[in-house]
Length: 153
Image (cartoon, rainbow, N blue to C red; front, side, top):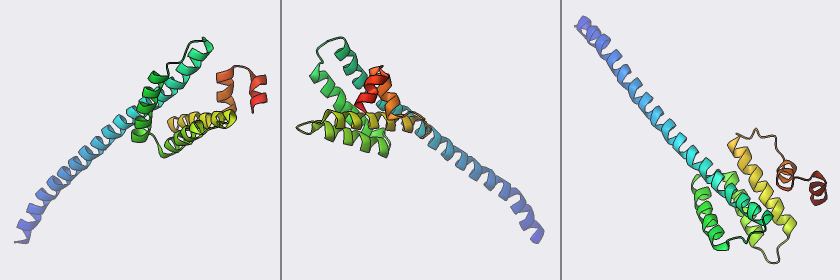
């Protein structure tokens, strides 16, 4: 009787272990796929919101009239995407920028500080907090004049 039980278990246990291993592997793969999809959407959301700001900068430097309606539509889409896919830190930095830029009367230095903080937070989120850039570095990239940056800061 005991021999029969041992033989049965020696066949059944490897089968059960194999099935459990396969189930765990499948779930792990599904989680990885979902994380990759979310990561792709998050990076696209970040790229879109940064593109809006650089588009405004480009139009301003070329003395073009900024299409406010188009920018507003893009900002609303960016709000949705940041809410859905952005990290908490990026979401809070974006909200800080939005609230400071909608205050009247607006303090340009405060708005720029919130904007730079938002850009830096995006950069840190994309680089896993390992970005060595500073707010000053981003400002130099935008202004292309270290003396002007030093006056601003």
